[in-house]
Length: 263
Image 1 (cartoon, rainbow, N blue to C red):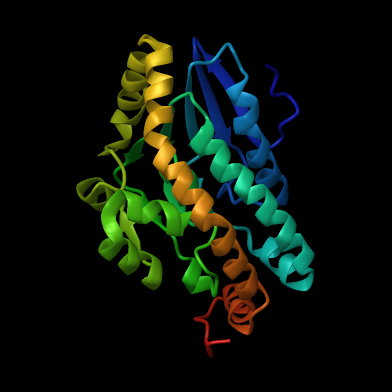
Image 2 (image 1 turned 180 degrees about the horizontal axis):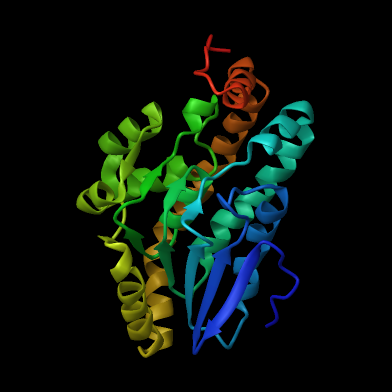
C-alpha cells in the first residue's frame, strides 16, 4: 500500500506498525483537504497487508486543534459544503470503528473538537501530561454531532460526558486518564517509550486474535454509531446555518467572547 497521494497525513512504517501523522502545522486543524483524507485513510489501512498496528499522532507540539475557522465560514456561506462534510464524517467514524487493526493514539499535545473525536475512537490512547483534551462544539454554536456525543458517554458515562459536552470545557490529560477518558497521561520524555512498548506488544502478538477481539468489542459501538450518527450530524447541520454559529465564528476572528441569542 502506497500513501504518497496523501498531502496532510504522513505515513511511515516501523516494522509491522504504520505511523500516521496529521500534518497541517502549526495546529493540525482539520481543513477540507485533511477532512477528505481522513475519510479515506482508514479504508486504505484496512487493506494494507504490511501493517498490523496503527499509531495516530500529530505533527509538532499539537495533536489537533479540530475544526478550521475559515472552513466554518465557507460552510455557513455554502451549506452544501457542510452536507458533503457529513458524508465524509460518517466515513471517518466508521473507518475508525471498523478498522480491525488496533490503533494506538499518541496524543503529543492539545486535542480539541474533531481532534478529540479522532483520538477517542482509537483503541489505546497515550497522551503527554501537559496537554488538554476537550470538545468545545457548543462554544462554537455547534451540536457536538461529529462523534463526540457518541463516544464520550461510552468512555466516562452520561453524567460526566454531559458536563463536558454541554459546557464545552476541556480537561487536562491527567484528569482524562483518572476518569477513564484516555488510558495514560505521561511526561513528554516518556511518551514515545510508552507508545512504543504498547505497539511492540501488539505487533508481536497473535494478530488475528487481537484484530478480532477488537472487532467483537466494537460491535456494540458500531450499533450505537449507526443509531445516532445520522441524527447528530443532521442536528449539527441545523446549527451550521444558525445565527449563534455565525456569531461564534465572528467572535473568534475578532478575538472576543461570543454573544449568543439561542438561534
